[in-house]
Amino acid sequence: MTLEIWLAFLVAAILISVSPGAGAVACMTTGMRYGYRRGIWNIFGMQVGIALQLAIVGAGLGAILATSTVAFAALKWLGVAYLCWLGWKQWRAPAEPVRVGEEHGGGTRTALFVQGFLVNATNPKATVFFLAVLPQFIEASRPLLPQYLTVVATLTAVDLVVMSGYTVFAAKFLALLRAPRQIRFVNRLFGGLFVGAAALLATFKRAA
Image 1 (cartoon, rainbow, N blue to C red):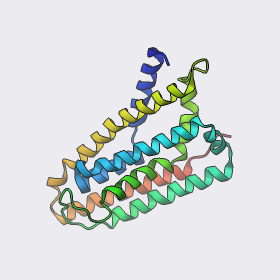
Image 2: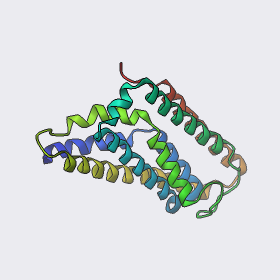
Image 3: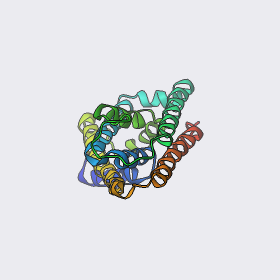
């Protein structure tokens, strides 16, 4: 991968990461509830999910997923169900101030890591998107493995920074949320955003 191609992919990676989606909602939710130090585990899980998606595309399995009606539908509806569950959980979260660092309500490092992983790993839109975008930055005449490793490293680094920004932004509001009415409103706002992301994913169809 030449420098020019890498710079072009870097711009694409930034645009991909900054675009609002389920990942951004998950980061803001964990930042608001647990702060950045614990929310970073959600971000780590998301990066593993992205790496898995890229590995699937690189191995050629993504093409099967994109063309198989059954496989595509199964992954899509799994993702929809998971996002709806996250929305329901956030909607019903207690309307009380949270102390950053507490391990309650599914806020352990492992739980947050798994949450982040599943948000990205169960998103067939990412697989189809990578299938459409990656070939434009991969030079078939050069060794493929180093290029895919460069892609993974670049996208992971960019997404770490962007998702950290979302998490820190939300964490800054922890000290402001003290009244039960305020906390309940924000919980239901993010719960609704998760369900909205699920609804958008439900309408997504693979290319004919």
